[in-house]
Image (cartoon, rainbow, N blue to C red; front, top):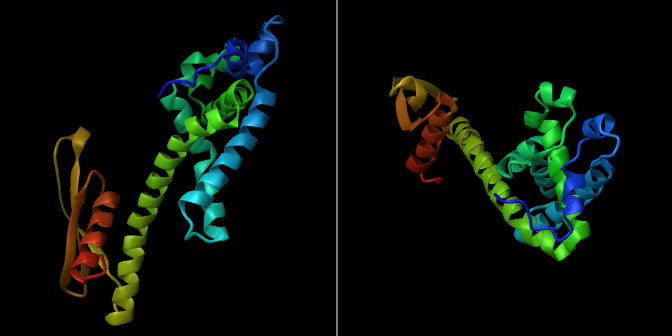
Length: 220
């Protein structure tokens, strides 16, 4: 993913300048902390507006939780990594030597600073056009993860309500080389198998088995 196109490259340079670099280079100018503050506000607003418009069925509580998931440190750091921001930051030697280019909090701050700088450079419409596709992709990943987790909960609720029993998951096997394992898990209620699934981890296989069980009883 490429950086947005800047007309004022000095704004981008400032967004990529960590305070540790300024501390070691007196002529480096301003660090990115004020731009980080601005970018944080811009991203928070855009995330809220995006969710409000994209998911009209969500209530306020769910919207708040989704926004928090979209703009948390881990999520924004992942976007910074997609942009290769870590490689482009101006860091002081100490920060560099301590692994700052890969530190989630620093990458998150850098992403916010770049967005703040782009807002000053190009305006809100340009920032929205750049950020919204990133938010849309992240929101779909978050919702997919929720659905996978919910499959286990939903099947357990059905089994306890209809049969008075709690499902149990049993690993059937593991195949493939160490770097590409494939796990297979089945879900049983009592002695009856309701579904089986496979995945690259036991957790993923368990979720797949739960989804298969929901299909078998007509709930998915």
